[in-house]
Amino acid sequence: MAPVSRKNPAPPSTAKRPRTSPGGRTGTSTSGPAARRAPRAARRRTHGGDPSTPNTAVVVTGGGSGIGQATARLLAETGRAVAVWDRDGAAARRVAQSCSDEYGVPAVGIKVDVTKTTTLKAAVKRSRTEVGPIGGLVHAAGIGGPMPVTFIDDDAWDQVLQVNLRAGATLTRALHESLLEANPGSAIVYVSSIEAFVGNAFLPAYCASKAGLLGLTRATCALLGPDGIRVNSVCPGAVDTPLIAPLLEMPGARENLISHTPLGRLAQPADIASVVCFLLSDDAAYITGTSLVVDGGMTAVGSV
Image: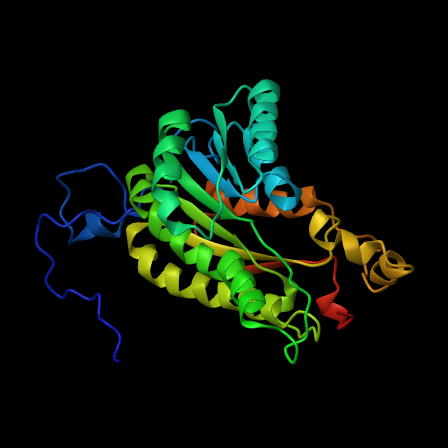
């Protein structure tokens, strides 16, 4: 099917001014010497507060632990309200409480299973009530599901794809209206993986789901970009989180990963969270539709 063209050769005079154009109006003609003057700087794409940090809330899935928890806390440290979603409701509430207590921002922790799409509308409604306008989404919830493709059953495959990939789409759909209302400055970050680029014989569903997030990033960028909503992914390498804890407990596994990482250490969740927060900020106002690899150099030397 041919792509739908967004071009409009003759936009009506009431068309919304592009976000990158100066906001003020003048009586200056658009032709002649005056038109050749240096343009004024475009308005900052921010909601307010810190010059580079929108002041709307961010929904963080998988926020009860690992990368999600580190991201929620770092967002709170920068002054942004957070809605921490996790299937472990107690963990979500603990993280939200720490964000509120330590950084003084509105925060709420909600038990959410991101695969239950019928529950997302209520979670969005409660989040907006508790923390205000939502201008960001971080989909950090994820599972591994180690099982070779020759042995994996339908349920195991579906579970990984539903949590890691399908939820990215359904969460975006559920939060679309909120992101539009909070704009300018709204942004989405999906947490993918370096295994979106390389194969792992024991993680076929995981590899497929994380590669799928990169496709979702590009497709959603194309759809939401004209509305000023940015969409990106981060691709972590080996991160010391509960997700890979069973692997790290195997004799020599931690040392092997470190020896194959040029920076000589595993990533900590905060290493990934800082990149996520950058992509959500106005410092990344012209970055969309791409992925940032954060792996200490593992893929650069082909050691994965």
